Length: 310
Image 1: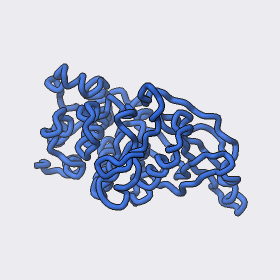
Image 2: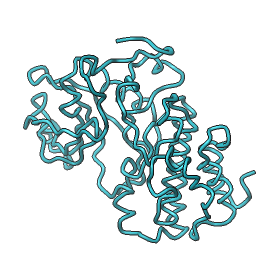
Image 3: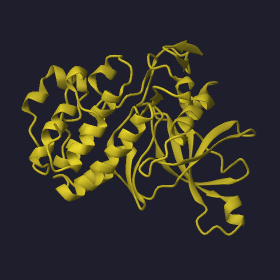
């Protein structure tokens, strides 16, 4: 472990020759039962760092809970073999447990199964569609009333997190779900705290881990700049543009390639987006961080209010 810029940084792959990329996805052999209590039933999803299972809480079931189901997240095999793995997973849990917002996924507990030597997070089980699934069903984009019903709570959740000094780090359609209980922003595994007690949590060594999703990561992130609220705004702006038009603003190219190809010059307002909302969204899509002069709060207000955002 090393301290850099006030944040403890864990070198999860200090002895590995190549850098680990998010495209390396490994689902480890998961046990049937964790901590003698959580029965894993089926895999819900796997990402570059973690795997999520639907599980049944046998303790709650014993006391006749009509809905004893929850989600269990563990690190994927590539990360779980590291001595720093449990600390990194705990950081994600600690970041989100202090965020009390109806549109941010609720974590329940961080636990360690000593016999299995596996750390895991239990959390709210979401039932619904992620936005990437919704986009597959809406190739022409969403009508404005549906788009607004997604955009406003999403931006409100992001603004809330930023207001408490927490950055998300990976805003993209697959990390946003429309559940039975409303929209949920989830997966803060690449996030960090800019202030408060969570600032001392260990973070990923981003020099060795190429974890960003290229099509939604701001150009400065791909070039090694630290995570910022402005970078989160760029990611959410790409999501909103895609929801409005059915197409990614820059063909899902890495932002550095899109910038060098000057794809922003041909960017037009989506037809499903009211004209009054376009200036704010266009500003949020700026490649240069100095030109991205709009916060999640101001972007939310631009899409929620009738008046012009400025």
